[in-house]
Amino acid sequence: MKKVSLTLAAVLLSVSSLSYADIQVTDSENGAWIKVTENGKPAANSVISVENQPQSLSSFNTDETGRVFIPLAMNHSSSVKFKAVTTDGNEYTRTAFHSVNKK
Image (cartoon, rainbow, N blue to C red; front, side):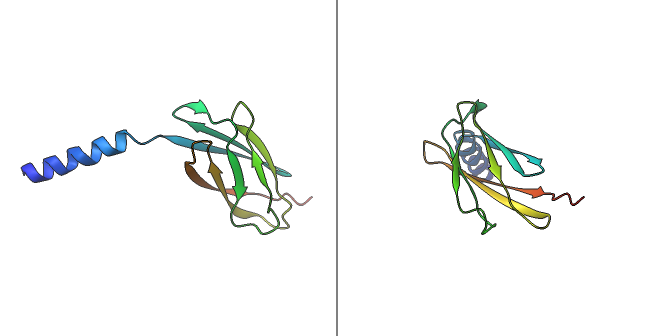
């Protein structure tokens, strides 16, 4: 029982020392707004790219508030995988659904 407790304590300590990042995606008609925060603060100058859409080959940098708009020229609704790399070199991903409204 002591070994289990010691192992669990070690895991909890290592997890608590990791930085916590969040990527928020807000879908819009022509693309998506991305906001990156790290430890609750905006992650300015993070490099954002789209991983699974070949028509979106560019990368974009977040502003001082951690936000950037990513244009998405898609013909159909699909899940989009966003990748953020912070100035510290930490990498985070988020998959979000992008809806294409055809009127």
